[in-house]
Image (cartoon, rainbow, N blue to C red; front, side, top):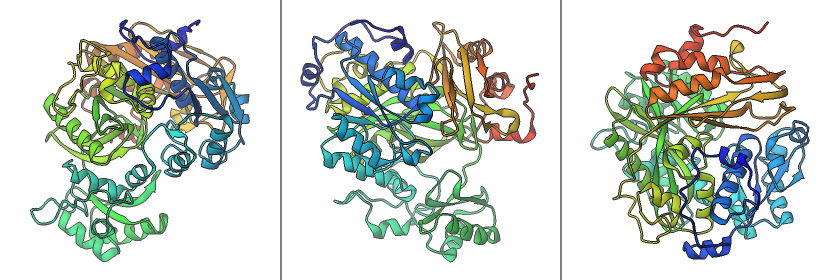
Amino acid sequence: AKTDTSLYAATLDPPATSASSAKTIEDYVKDRGGDRPIRKVLIANNGMAATKSILSMRQWAYMEFGDERAIQFVAMATPEDLKANAEFIRLADSFVEVPGGKNLNNYANVDVITKLAKEQGVDAVWPGWGHASENPKLPNTLDEMGIKFIGPTGPVMSVLGDKIAANILAQTAKVPSIPWSGSFGGPDDGPLQANLNAEGTIPSEIFELGTTRNVEEAVIAAARIGYENGIMIKASEGGGGKGIRFVDNEDDLRNAYIQVSNEVIGSPIFIMQLCKNARHIEVQIVGDQHGNAVALNGRDCSTQRRFQKIFEEGPPSIVPKETFHEMELAAQRLTQNIGYQGAGTVEYLYNADTNEYYFLELNPRLQVEHPVTEGVSGANLPATQLQVAMGIPLYNMPEIRRFYGKADAYGTDPIDFLEERYRDIDCHIIAARITAENPDEGFKPTSGSIERIKFQSTPDVWGYFSVGANGGIHEFADSQFGHLFAKGPDRESARKSLVLALQGMEVRGDIRNSVEYLVKLLETEDFKANTIDTAWLDGIIAEKSVAVDMPS
């Protein structure tokens, strides 16, 4: 079969040359201890997610079987994506046109996705991120149809989607939590603990203890936590900036509680201490169907604008190695305790001054920034997701075995991921999201045509884009259309390589983009010294201390 150089854009390094004796997916699954060959996949996403998933799984198929078409990919395509000449449609083996407009009509519509999955005769559905990727109705419905969802089960996804339940589960797995209404930090007041019951939920009586059911309960809980660092009032079903308020006194708390309850009507509410000067640290976890959980290192995603990540890097060099290993083990325990299957991310808040970390959430999906981990670990994550869905144990996956220094990548001897350590990381990777946003207008999204993207990859810098030549960004599309990754022996080398790559990049078309602004952020003394936290970029934007020249 003829290969395509674009296959290698998905990950930094091609896998080692030792190869499987399996010639077909069926043979490979049998040899590796799996039970479910997957040959046809519906990609229930668009843009960057769809592009990256097809590239990665094609690369894996070619390296294992010498045939990048061993797995067939069916894409969903809206009229807007077709008109914009979206790259993922070109990459897929076939596509089915779906209704246009907002994503509730298409990529987030479970009925549309499941109907297509059945009509197209696919073996599995890959959900990506955003859209329907965290809707438990999708895995539940597919399971009833006998089609594999490439991700966690519906009940586990559902319980992780509730912030109160997720915190209780984390505490049960002995993952540290910041003081909140389910754990005040004292000897006799928490942390709440519970395991999932037969219905896959937290027992209601324990769940209720983590909530503040009215203003008076919130006032009592806040007094026990203390206002010194500030208090966050959160609706457990909130998100996207809704159902969250910050207060530092009782009067404001009383008012804010009512505002939160009105914004997300019917949602349970909890309160937690604000973690100041925090870094956003992630652990990349993967769980299989046999009770194993691996941590593939992690990422520092502290450069954020209104909780949206701008740069991501790994390994998280700000965290001491042994502390980060503790964070990995805690994440693995949580993954195993709840029977999590597939790729996910355990997110922490980390205080570099005190070397303390606190559970934030477990995202039950692949993250946009997962290629950082691929570059560090050598593990192709969409292909790892696919193998988990095929029932293959983690310790039988060649790329995982290489990461753990096993001489025989195709061996089948078990690995105790809680006891054994993976090989030392000898590189650093920094990623930059390329978006169709105007940094001079508060990063307002823009749309329009893109005539050409000029980007030259090097051995140290690679990237991928969801828009081809003479394409564009339509009004319903995600603003991110590219992702660049720079690798070096250390953080400063990676930073310099990324700066050079961004400076040499050119985007021609109607849209505004953030490339020049990203270069200026990378050149700030704070970023160079790695002294940033999650509030750093919002402070720069508020002060307008970094600006770009308007094009003439």
